[in-house]
Length: 359
Image (tube, rainbow, N blue to C red; front, side, top):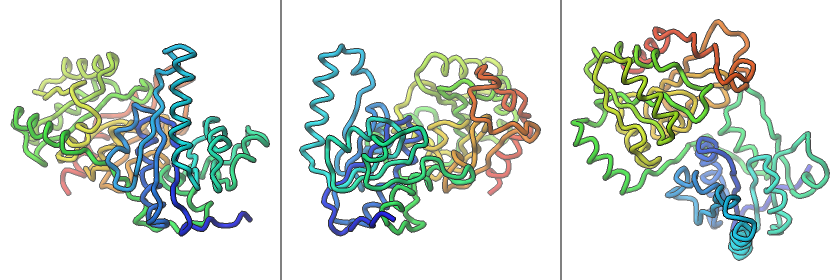
């Protein structure tokens, strides 16, 4: 058994999470847990630049280091210069510990280049000696499907010998003063009151995770008699805005459309003020849960026990007639269309909404 890390000796640590927005947000508890184990330690994060809002403002993060996904488009020389500058910045921090939270190959190279005294990464069945010998400690890359991703991320600290407490598993997201002020103005413009509206985010970057627009519209029609304004949001991408436009066209009730108009921080500030959030398996659903908003999460092929709303009042709605789910595929036979979602009844989602609204 590998010896535990002496947390009292740590001066600086780097946590690497190179994934999408929701994945990065669900890694937030790692910083809180490490800070509790080593209060004197400065903890940095390395993430993709577009996911930085998920961690910026976290009280336990000293510095955010960023990798721009667009470096590859800038040409070989500019990419090499950017990578060298990043490596120089990281080397200048003299890390004692590197925590790698994905199977991204960059993690093994970083550990070898930064040469921390301790490092931890996921054990990979598809990797050889180079990967496994890069780290002083290893943890299971894939946990039991009944365990949530937040808990799996914390396994990295457990592998180092940390005693992870229940309070350490809290997901922190700080919208910031600018986002709060912008949403105050938006709510005033539309006559919205805190706790007095329902926030719906029906879109995802992955089409196979989306509930059909006509069913979202029917849900809006069914919720409208409650007298709570219905606010629609989505990312600026064309496909997501098209889905929201289709919802508006099919709905028979007024909807407040903020699609493509909010930053991620502003989205967090908005959903924190909602009475209820309704959405699919996506980053905004995780944001709503992090902000403590009651959440109805609509799931298709992805696993709700691993990716469901974390530590908030919630209901997961998924097909009860498709024994094949969660299959983890990009739609049935990778078609980008998921039968378990296209056939999901409106009444089932409405019932979940009614349960949370009645609390």
